[in-house]
Length: 222
Image (cartoon, rainbow, N blue to C red; front, side):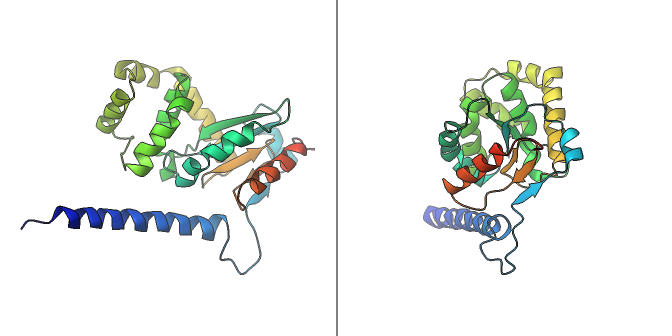
């Protein structure tokens, strides 16, 4: 039985729309707390002095975004974050890592992130990775799909594989996993500020940017 192309296209668009709505609803319920009647917010956690001392993060005065290539809100925040970075005070830094955990589906692309970082091309290809995973539903954790994506982005596949197996990439993955575990990161995007605070976005930009700057000004463990 033949199915009209318009019918298939309509169904595909319908499924994509429902998927997007579910994602938005999830963030409003569990991250933004839009529909919460309790008045309690869990968008900010503060670590103890002991936890700060044992943090795998070495740098002070930092904001570290924990993201995922499969995270719609991470992708949509890129423009806001690029503007936010320009407002950081002197002596501070904004860094990005990929959530890395055996128990989280969001961590599926951690090795891709770490490898691109080691090749010093991650930031340049981040939008392409977001687009492939979120918009085009390409599983970049699949070797065949990844190879096609690499070729389409003019990346030497053999060089990528060589770097992927390197000790440097393994160290990056261990570092990101240690941060994910130490700060109990289970949702993206999350922001670790001065090794002390873990925040998730509970307000729109630029108000959220101001909130992060206020936390940054408190200093690590001070």
